[in-house]
Image 1: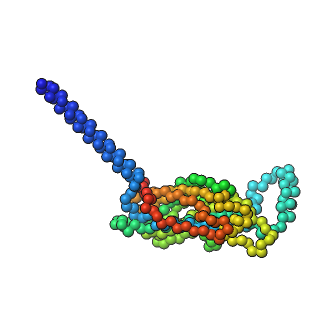
Image 2: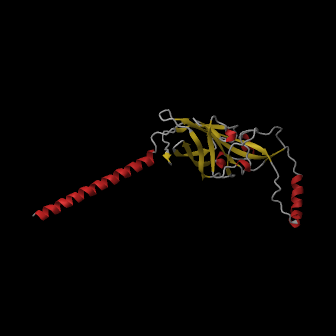
Image 3: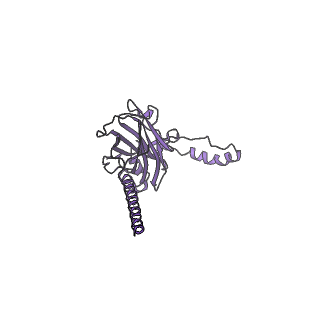
Length: 273
């Protein structure tokens, strides 16, 4: 009888331990799942708003001869085509670029009590989720020159990531953001559109009105992007994801279209370190 009672006690102890382990695993799983859904409760800096401005512009067509073959036979074959091209005289013969300039405002979280400063803010993992029907989307950073915010040339292409360093004040051309909160900039441009050629207009059409001149529709230009926004402070790093539909509705025929996004209640921030 004593042996039976001891055996029952051992089974009860084993059952209690097993139950405790199952409960612990369940609680841990719930905590992990909740973190995946809700993320960090309080972060030192967060997205305050995003402004997207869609428009279009024209750039002069630049002949790049760096890839011209030295083969004499190829040169002779193309000579007739080159002469024919030179005979095409237009009042306007311009490269058309559909632009989508994004302004991301990083605000200090007033509910976060510990003093922190931004070390850097990064845009990473850029993806085209839905592509345009016509053209090719490329990503650009602000240029470092004095003439305008963007120059749509290879020198300012964003390949994998774009980093703004924390500084005393915003300086978009130096890729710096105020370390207590500021604005970063990036542009998604459709570089694969046909050129605008005309002998009719005495003035070059401006903004999105030129898209109508080359027979594009809003449906032709729609695309969707996503990217990770990484905010690194003194001792921690936070990441969230941003998804945007562009261009802003109705750009064809308009000078430009705007959207201001301020609802970030469902934005989830994960701590990387």
